[in-house]
Length: 122
Image 1 (cartoon, rainbow, N blue to C red):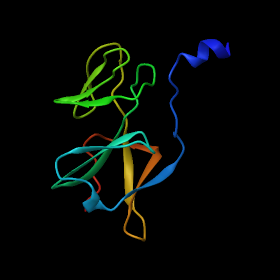
Image 2 (cartoon, one colour):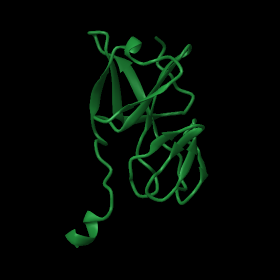
Image 3 (cartoon, rainbow, N blue to C red):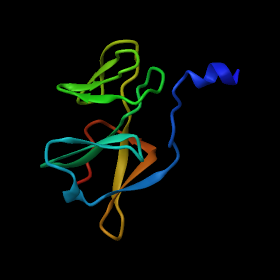
Image 4 (cartoon, rainbow, N blue to C red):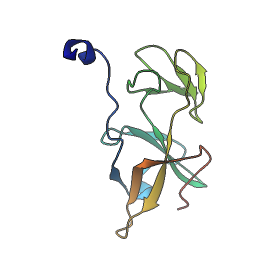
């Protein structure tokens, strides 16, 4: 069974809180990939939000595309809200809760999901 399991990407980091930096370290209106947390962080004039970088089909790490996200493994495509547009995935990407640590850094709580419209106000 372990030989079979090696071919399937694994979801990781599902029960952690991770400091991801200060709000100004994220460029305005861009998605920044944070490999330690397998998330993309987006900062706009309304605040900061974080979306999972793990495809909901089989757990591959997705990539940012021109108009959303795409899985390089099996071709699932998501829009910028994380909703499935095409491909094998049937579930939208997860959005995560963010909060500010006392030292001012942003922390992502990978145990707590939020609505795609959720933003941490900065």
